[in-house]
Every structure is written in structure tokens, then in C-alpha cells.
Length: 65
Image 1: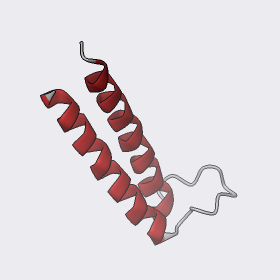
Image 2 (image 1 turned 60 degrees about the vertical axis):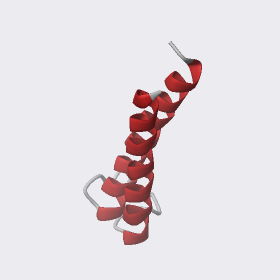
Image 3 (image 1 turned 135 degrees about the vertical axis):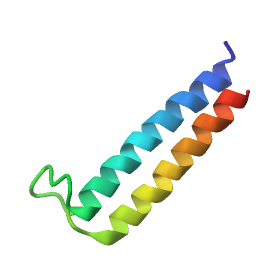
């Protein structure tokens, strides 16, 4: 297996998971930890969406290699 392919897919999965976490915290659906500055803050949800899209793109690119 190509190391670049593995790295892209792994990084894409991490970006996707982090993006989903940011979306959950930014929208208030995942309020953990309770003292987080990201809870119910829409800009973090938008940043999370961008990060998740980047993760999906990296996964798709890695699958094509």
C-alpha cells in the first residue's frame, strides 16, 4: 500500500471526526466539556463543517491514489 494513500486517508478520517465534533459543540448538541468556549457558538460549527469537508476530500483523494 502506498504510504501517501495511507496518510491521506488517516488524516482525512481525523479531520472528519474533529469537524463533526466541532459541529456538535458549535450547535450545542454535544456540550462536553461543560466549560468549553465552543459550546453553542455558531462560528465553530461553520469551521467544523469546513474541516469535515476537507476530511472527506482527503479520504476521496487517498482512495484514488
